[in-house]
Length: 292
Image 1 (cartoon, rainbow, N blue to C red):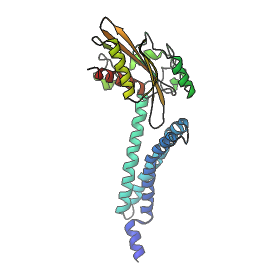
Image 2 (cartoon, one colour):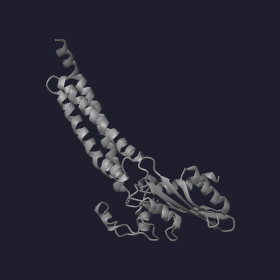
Image 3 (cartoon, rainbow, N blue to C red):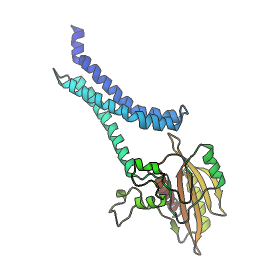
Image 4 (spheres, rainbow, N blue to C red):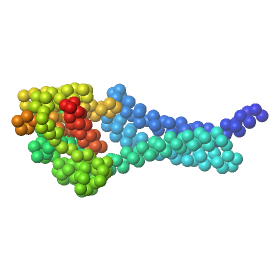
């Protein structure tokens, strides 16, 4: 009799099913940390961790958890509803629903952003890499080329119709914020990316501020050439350890001023999800702040 009462209070098999739904929902969240953590620990490479586990299996696990959660709620409410199974199922639905919401938002953001992995402030006079930087890229299997006038590959048309075969510079310009086309900067895929002009800052001060900013960010400096005003550094992401290379050019501007251009290029991948544009803008903003 006691066992029957305990089973009734716990919801019996419906309680166990709701508990399973909750466990799968929690596992769906942990899965993304497992995929990223395994890459970080060197258990598998980024192609397995990001493409297969995160982008491939991740959404399927979350979808499965969401389906189990909905079914668990239905079962908890029909034929003598039970409170405990309902609460467990509701928790599972909230967790899996939030996870699905994040995935949908990430997908929408990826589709909104153009297929670019090479961003710079001045395409009329592009910054080109040194032999040292090219060697560093080759050593890690970086297959994205750094060119003076790169073109988006034709296979981009499958996800971003009309972008394949176009110049990266043109697509970047169209994606940037334009007050004539958008009211707010957040309405554009990218913020305005432009040269930092410092009319009252000397070349030496501007160069040192740029180098200090790069070092403060913890990027690995590949080249530091104060004579020519060139700095090259590599930024490595925490989880998947994607490596993006940043090239900075400092030039005198007039008698007492300086100008700073920057270029950020991913070593792998077609779309950077806006990371390089964000990196360039934040870099220039931080340099400007340092000089105040």
